[in-house]
Amino acid sequence: MGPPVLSLALPSDTGRVLSIQSHTVQGYVGNKSAVFPLQLLGYDVDPINSVQFSNHTGYPTFKGQVLNGQQLWELVEGLEANDLLYYTHLLTGYIGSVSFLNTVLKVVDKLRSVNPKLTYVCDPVMGDEGKLYVPLELVSVYREKVVPVASMLTPNQFEAEQLTNFRIVTEQHGREACNILHAAGPSKVVITSININDELLLIGSHQKEKHLNLIGPTSRAVQDCDTQNSCVFHGNWRFDDRTFAWME
Image (tube, rainbow, N blue to C red; front, side, top):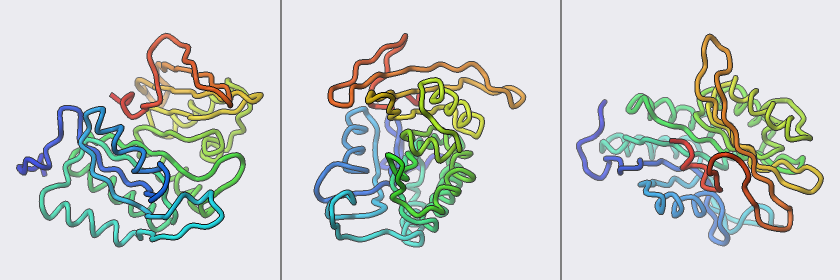
């Protein structure tokens, strides 16, 4: 299937994004914090809310609804039935169950059958500061099935450790974790927060190519952040918090 004829489904000059993430009524996480910035960058964004909660789960209580895998697939089938399934990018965030994550993998395959050049950006939201806030069984699914098909990964320090089985306590460890993830699949990796002596490091790594299963040339950016203050970038090329725009 080639690009659809319906004008609403044609990508903008920048691209057309399917964003499968969480949504909260109060606060800015998931789709609520991703859609508008991406639109400002010129992307045409279609959001699917994996959950709709009153507030994020860090509060003492929360209420809301959780989309299951079958419901996600029904939405995808509805888009396909109307020739609206041509996307240049897929973005995924918080996913609360193995069944839903397995359906996301089906979505990746479906979108790539329509557009083989689809870029898949995965934020493997699993936990932080040594604690999981998703079921443990999701970790192996991310590691064994999702990482190999992702174009770009944006884990935090804890999530990167879960995906690599590698402890990160220094900047060099962060770079080594990026190499492990590159070898598993994605050409771009952003470890969004590495806490070293109360300073946060952000490491962005782009593996330009692979030859005969060997890691090709890699460019990296490192951003230092005081845990109480704003971040100041140092490096030889521009990099900011809009990591999605770095894919091109």
